[in-house]
Length: 130
Image (cartoon, rainbow, N blue to C red):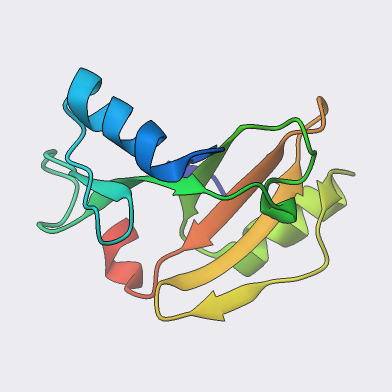
């Protein structure tokens, strides 16, 4: 059975990206990089490889999150995206029919019973999950 391996990122929709990112930086100490208005939070466990991180990122108001009123989306790391998506479909879950691939890895999406889109991510370096 495929299982989630960890959180890959937490994404928040914004109206004013710079102001929101600065609020998280100034009030919560998030190490926001103004080049992309996001932050990479290093993982510090024995099971994670050096350099691995959980990402916090801000997104413009777009269809990427699914519902218009969804303001947060969680990205979960998985070992085998295809197997996870197949398993979810077989369980009757609402799985988007597309998979995207880029230099950051492969991405797929499922919608939970409350209508929240959840992103599933298989990093390009599958040794990360090992």
